[in-house]
Length: 333
Image 1 (cartoon, helix red, strand yellow):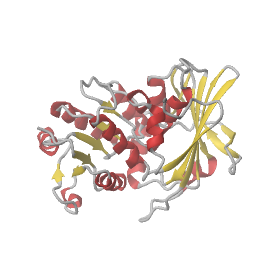
Image 2 (spheres, rainbow, N blue to C red):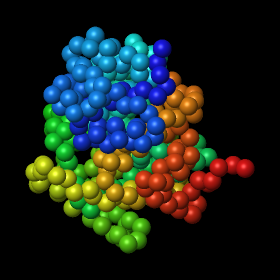
Image 3 (cartoon, helix red, strand yellow):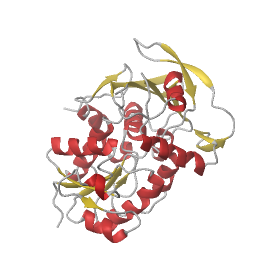
């Protein structure tokens, strides 16, 4: 029988994985550290080495786990084998994948247990915000997710995952428009976005596609989902090398849902896009294990959970601003 306190973390020794282990311990769960590199796992007590090329080792690593969080990229290589093992174990699966192609593959999977991909800063947070902003609307004309980062110093793992994604789509970029994913060979548009004060109007890369263009359309009826990135942060990604130490960037996520002349807006502010992925994923696991979702199969965060309530639970980690005219963030009496 699985203990409801045990949560396997695959890729526990990675940058995000270490945040995940710490957050689980903070919340009273018992992390079961796992991953492919036994030497790196040696720093953790009760480590459970497992390889995605060895299903039996994954089965052993999940023995006694109530859920699994996959932090090991590239997810093109790890997601499917770890999901398969979670299905064999009969436990829910959550990952922090920002790889668009890996997310697409996961949403095509047939899983009898709950699978929540992209439960992280990119993909999960924007989906929760868009779902909460949508509120009682059954459809919208468009969803816009704009990111302002003070800087962006991706980890080596993030860069490797991004390289796999670009290779899989032959260097093309991808966007969600006209109700479908479209692959394009042209450059993304240079635009401007007016963020809330004090940032104001900033140059951005339009159609700087992140996992939100995969997660949001799986359950929200909007023919256009666009993501934007401040030009400075986008330039950082292209020009800076990975260092031994990362600077925790500040972030602002500005989500606007539009229907005709009506507009609803939610803003999130915080620090360190890798660190905040841990409370996002752990809160998801906590809600699943405590019966706060009835979802099964492969679903996004906004479909699996009460989005507004989930965002309120993140208040110790980030500031959420509910703009006038948005959905009511307060629980019903």
